[in-house]
Image 1 (spheres, rainbow, N blue to C red):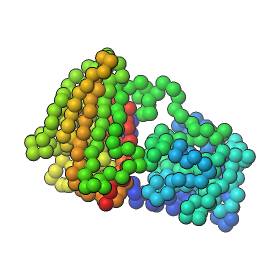
Image 2: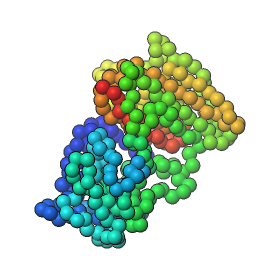
Image 3: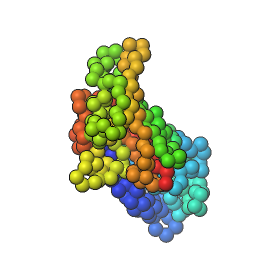
Image 4: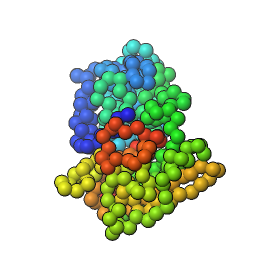
Length: 317
């Protein structure tokens, strides 16, 4: 399992947006080509170079609602002429719509089409199932419907993980820190009574910000919790070593509940200095759990025992 590495993503997104636009529109007045090609999820809609195309559940019609920061992460498929269907794509489902900036975006079965900035190679589907900016993103079938992973697998390829991780706040697309502070609220839940043992070391506790236990790294009250923020800076000589720094140890409030024989934890972090993690910038929060004690720095070789949640939101300026 490879964790999304968000270092420098905004810059990469801007470059990728321009590259995607040039690739999609082609030269002169030729229209963008759309076809069906192979991917990690099977046969899906791709562009002329085999890059996966996505639809967004937030769009309720052919006109895109993904603009600004959203379009930097999810560049639209643009065209300078009438789009062309090939290789299994249906020309009767192709169309176009005018974006808010005046450019022309390709639609399929009435859905605006997008790339995902982290898909760097043909066939990659790293954006599948993400819920950034207020709606789910999925690749597209030849019939124009969302392509989902097979039933019975988790969103990270680890099957039926015994724990369920949930981000309560901030929500996807939220702007956090408008009032000068914001909270990150999480939950880990045992899916079955048998999975309670994986949360046995979790305790109810208040982690005083003035106490020596308050620092980046694992949380003594929630030992397996991993929390990453893409905008975490690197500060030499401190535990803050960029976006792979586990921030669970700065969560102040840890609580435990038991419902229907299953344990559930609640973990909260009150961020009193939002600007420390960037101002007016989009951040990605990543949350999951591992067995035993979580690492202080995530390497990407961890084996989650929960689903991996990635939530995109904006830190207010």
